[in-house]
Length: 323
Image (tube, rainbow, N blue to C red; front, side, top):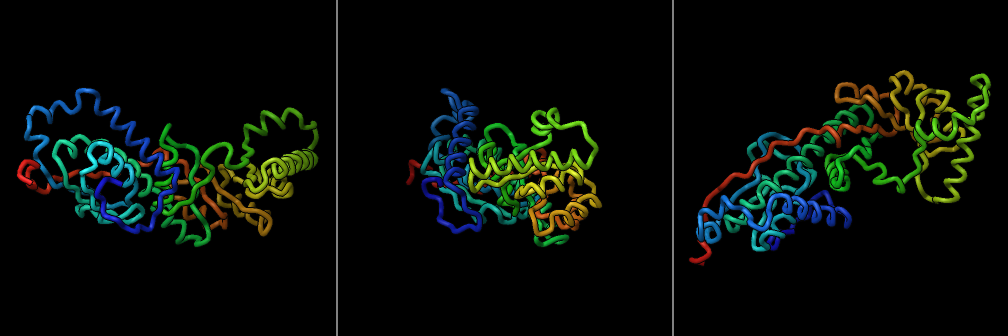
């Protein structure tokens, strides 16, 4: 946190890796914005820019869910540890249009230098949290036991923070990287299994696919104990093979609600089901109502619109020279 940030006990807690990611994001953002010459516009005002003390607030222009507060803290810690930030709400809590989320006090040059870096992260990550919250609200109404899961469809260098924002919005995280879980997707099947499948009728081909899946599940449990094993399926036949093979989860890709209902009957009590592909705010309730355990929505991270948040000047404090 910034040097004199007020201690709070927010509902959302950052993990150690997320704290490190927040610091790294702040460093990258400031490196883009401030070179050796710094903020030349503010410097035009001479000594007044460094002597002036101002109060300001992060104020949302629309309702949403806050995420990214830690990045904003890190930005001002890096610029000037004397900048005070008092958060009025924490990550995962409601942003109300026109109501301040945080109040800042410090030197004018420090606050103005960090304004854009802090806001970029707050707007982007709060946008993700807000979209996640919208999906979660609809899912919970249709099926209280169903959960929103994110994907690896994230922006380069921001995955950890974007996934944290999904959690702030009420979703849960799928694998962070390729070593977090086994996920046998359609391209794995096409690259490694299809060419080896015997030319038989559908029932026998499904039986052979089940055998291949079972071998992979056994190998995965031996080599990576405790890791989730998930298999992607685009037909009920593949769902049946994956369930029979002992997968922990079956990812039902681009299936219609009636097909998902069939998949739920196949998997009931044997493994979890995750729906993915083409899920929107308009149809997510229908998808959740089929009884699947998870719904994966890539758009939550790759297409969430930024939430409009601004920095408003509240007033001037005593100049440093008069303290």
